[in-house]
Length: 147
Image 1: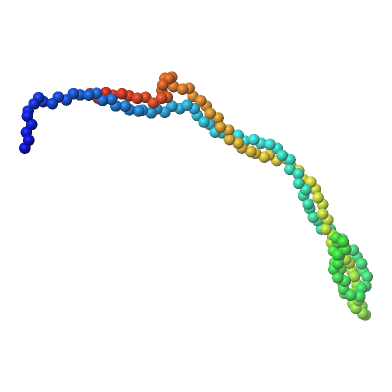
Image 2: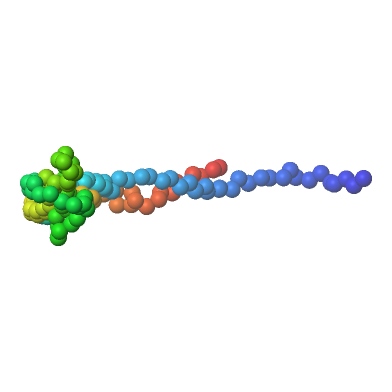
C-alpha cells in the first residue's frame, strides 16, 4: 500500500462560466390577399341553320297502261305511280295518279348575343410596419453567469 503524506487540504477556486441562449421571435411583415375577378364580354354568334321539308304533289293521270310502272326519280323528285285495277270486259291497267315527292332545302342565318365569362386571380400584398426596436429582427443572446 502506498500512503500519501497528509498535506494542506485542496483548495477549489470557482470559475465563472457563461452560457448562451438563443430566442426566436416571429414578426408579421405583411399579408397576402388573393381574390378572383370575373370579366364578361359579349360575343355575337352567327350560324347557318338548315331545314329540310318534303313537298308532295298529286297529279291525276287517268290513262290506261299496259304494265305496272316502276318508282322512278326525275332529278330531285321521286315519282311513285299509283295504279288501280278496274274491271271491264277485259282487264286494263289505268294510271290513276302519280305522287311526286320533292325535297326542298332552305337555309337561314341565326344570330344571338351571348355573354361569355372569364376569371383571373389578383394577388395583392399589404405591408405592415416593422417593430420599433432596431435590432428586434436579429436573434437576441442572453448571457447567464453561473457561479
